[in-house]
Image (cartoon, rainbow, N blue to C red; front, side):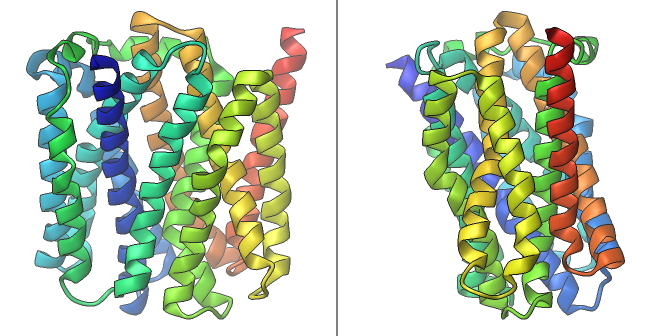
Length: 377
């Protein structure tokens, strides 16, 4: 019973993380675009959230040990809901820099705790499939955010109120976490996070590159859609379509990761992402845009699914906690780079700078995987 209740809590925590980011990035980017803010400034403003994640993630093991992971997760969900309302209450670019920084801190809590829970309670035999289910929940929550923006628009209080209400509902399953889960989230020194980098450099690089893709597409794919000729609702739907591929195809990717070498599956996902990112500019606004986005999303997000499953296979105990914290730090670094470089790429190369950035990032990762494999041999 404890096992499944805590897995449910992990999925709930990551869904709040995904929904808060999935709604905030496109909503604020579209509002800033409507106000005439440049893509460079939109990228810099978007970067405040991953900066908050970077600053706060190393503190989470300490807080969880002192106050208990359940209490910390519930507090983070409530604070996240209040921050969503604060965007509308303090409707200015300057205020949004501060709010996004604090929101990064609150959602990093849910990110780290959910990963620690999922890798601790997913059994060895089915870890790939359970982690894939977890990634599917994350993807669905990411997709729900931009879908909501597309359905109800960006005007007024409504998107912020609905977002806050959805986040508050998550407190119910979070409160069901078994008390002894809190004993599992152990304090991890920051030095332990950095030392982990020498043990799994490819995994950390994969998470970082995935985060570049994640942040850049969340912040700029709706703007990409507007600039190639889509209307507002369809541009928001493009982001949801990208994420839908992940929702429906992560379980097959998890099955492949359980059945075959995880490194091989990681290489496959990386290479497919490069190919379909290159194809994206050639689709224009044609019907081919949608299947390309589905496959691009599935492969791009699949890199993270396989990396998380491999983490659970290879590490236990304190090393596993250090790995989860290191994943959060790398996600913050990658999201920071993706938020800023996405704006730069569009400024320099037009809308097609976004898929070019994705293709280049994953090509670097693919090269790194090949070099690492050759050294191991």
